[in-house]
Amino acid sequence: MIPLLSVVVPIYNVEPYITECLKSLAAQTLDDLEVILVNDGSGDGSRRVAADFVARDGRFVLIDQRDNLGPGPARNVGIRQARGTYLAFADSDDVVPPEAYARLVGTLAETGSDLACGAVARLVDGVLEESTLHEKAFRRPELCTHITDKQVLVRDRTVWNKVYRRDFWERNALAFPAGIYEDVPVAMQAHVLAGSVDMVGDVVYHWRKRDAGETSITQRRAELPNLWDRLAAIRAVRSFLDERAPELLDGFDALVLEKDIVFLFQALEGSDEPGALLELADAWLASLSPKALATAPSLRRLELHLLRRGLVAELRKVREFRRTCEDGTRIVPRGLRVTNWYGDYPFFRKRRRLRIPDEVFDARDELKLVARVEECAWTGSEYRLRGQVAIHRVERRVGKVSLWLSDGRRRVPLEVRRAGRHGVCASFDPKRLEGGGPTWRLMVRAETRGLVLKGWFRDGDANSAWRFSVPGWSRSGMDITQ
Image: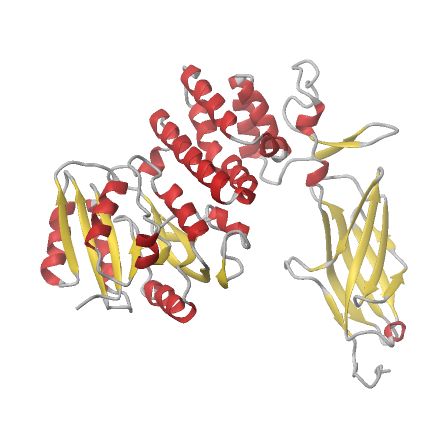
């Protein structure tokens, strides 16, 4: 019988982990599946473990390759043997949660989309953590969307947290290249070529950070050949996006500067002879758009500036500074008639001596208003508010603060009293809200040294807006409780 789902698993020297992986596949609540194991020239006991599963479970199939050709070619071999209506991939050192494939396949059957993808957890020393690579991609699940509409999917560059329609895969002649990071170009191609994509909020994959046995490819990512292969994958993706979805290039380049280039920095930090790495760095920077390089966060721009000039010792100092600043880095104002705002990083006060342009440290676009309500209490005659207003990463007290309540149409100003460095207090009689809506937000305008920021208050430390619900409100009129 033709299975509903085919799962392709390349295997290479993963003896300490493969049993847990294969058990997780055997335990899927979607049992109408076949698991195609491709032994890619393993030299340890991985093949024996795989053969044991094949002997015990008729849904498992083993294909042997004598030579180690890499995960890409191994996956391609498995795809050619796949019979399922749907197609998925798993790496043999990772774990798939029991409900994952049932959730993804069920979503595709309901919507008709070409692929479904979900959130990822990192498996570190037996403990699940959020995957920093995927952390922003799946905060808001959505069905029947597309990467050009939901551009946060540029961050979803892995193939194993997904299920694909096999006819979609074959119709677009998708195939994995040889080499390292073979999944990045394919994942991006699939997202762009899909008619629609389903995003589920559930964690559908546990991505392991190895703690025993051979180190994985991604854990050898600071090695020079590995870095060249990463650059090749980046170039392949950029070439494809430039042709098929140029609107995604800025987001992709920003992600490369956020995530990928860190491994180049790490390699330089540990190298005694950085010449070859600096040559590679020139190639990396030449591959990215000038806009992405110019609009990177200020601390990253400083790292890139030092990298471009080959100032390795200074770069190492900045990298150490980044690691030790647990509470974030300060932004400071400079200038009398016109105030500019700069990151107070290493070499900022020596920037002219090192010929580092001021714009490298410019952090004005990174200034964010922080406003939160800590208490709202009824006194019997009025409501009293107490909260905090500050500018993130700026230590100085905000100069002027204005507060008002807004229901989206009306604006009710409040008298502000300052309390301490960042504290603010205000009070209001709810009768002042009569004739307005049932729910009001507390809004703020903060001004200091010519800088003006506006926003709304959050509810304590929560990410949601603080809202005041009018007592006794009704569509026929407000009935304020006395």
